[in-house]
Length: 463
Image 1 (cartoon, rainbow, N blue to C red):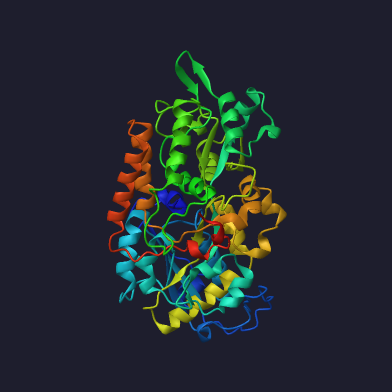
Image 2: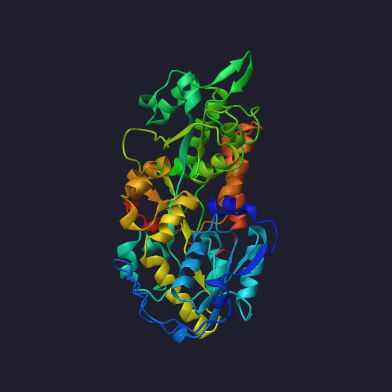
């Protein structure tokens, strides 16, 4: 699930805002920095940054940064401001580009455009578009691996262009008010899907034959198209073939899971196709008791539905045993460096990346703004961070979350259609799954995508 896309919905034009954000008017007009010794502490454990030096020999320089977000969603922006304060000869020009236009405008602008940014926001789903224009980080891989989780998954030909600042996955959000009304307590939080179904039944209400409260709502975007991968992983099924090139949607695990979900609608009757097509809105309005969602939902609830009293618990599993994997995860990427920009600008960008990754402020900000778990190891036991229920749910499962790589979007869109055909249109599961598999293979024809599932620590446990 492309969490950054959700966060970026606020950006509605191709170029909403362009601002020079130097350290006051002096920074914008070109200050010469002669103070190498800033009197500041060295940051970091393995990846370190000593701010007590001159950048660009202290001579004025302007660098650009492009993002689909703003300061309320993109933690890099705040860190760029902090960097300007340390190095007043550096002026940063920040441009915000709408998500829908970013993936056309940015790749075209990077190469050979003197006005293109030297730093730019990265989403791993667009790796193929951006990688040809990226310069590798000038930071030792071993140091990055010592400080950050899953760095090895981002090593390509011995080089690292970006890593995960934070990661996220799916959990179950539940309405505490409806939970209490049903006589449920925290002791009733289900660990298995069988227990989950029984809880969902208690949370479902009817007026005659009409459902007026859904125990578990799966309708709309981001529900099945996000959940199916986790359910398959729980059964030990990979998303791709062993060589990582062919999708594995048409398999027994997919069919078993679709049958399980169909039963929620037709047998257990805790979900209904007639209960709207937006489970997120239904949950926010207090009409659905539980939904599956990633961390971005928390920001939506706080913004649009501040009165909802909700909790979060980890997605159930099919048994009490530890599964092959609990779910897929995805990361929010650190910025890219434009390999086509001038040597002077790239040197400043490299210096900024080291500043970004050495300290804790960037990741702490990312945790809050993107409601995601810290990729930096030193913050993964932080009590303040773990006080967030989403972080607390992710923490004990960190070692059993799997990233298949920057998966093509057809692995979400085509299964979503299969789910709709089964649940809404009554199509048999075998036909729906086979049709989706064929569409996925058509969409991926000619793709050079190779799954990273083979790098998962517990890959030997897969079916």
